[in-house]
Image (cartoon, rainbow, N blue to C red; front, side, top):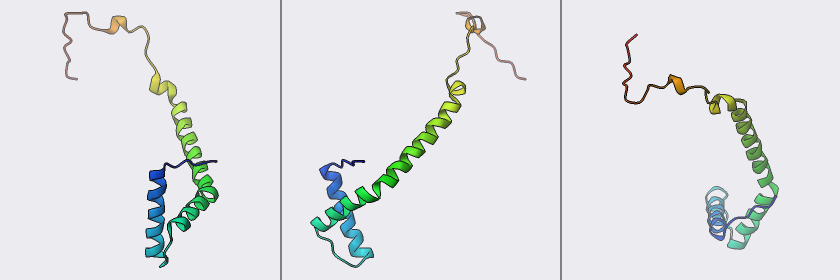
Length: 94
């Protein structure tokens, strides 16, 4: 799996990793170190998140497919059930 981040995304993530390391780990990461750490995360951990996203999408689409006929069903032979042009439909209270 290859993750293609834009230069802007990569810079924002590197900056976030640097802030996290400084605040939570009490250490400073340079741009190169944070970039290498990002590469490691994307290569080693990224596939788990990607695979979970694929599974989530698969589950979501399967649920939608199960209800496809309920979602996309159109009743046929409805021409005669419509009010004629120029007539009013009066709704009666039950």
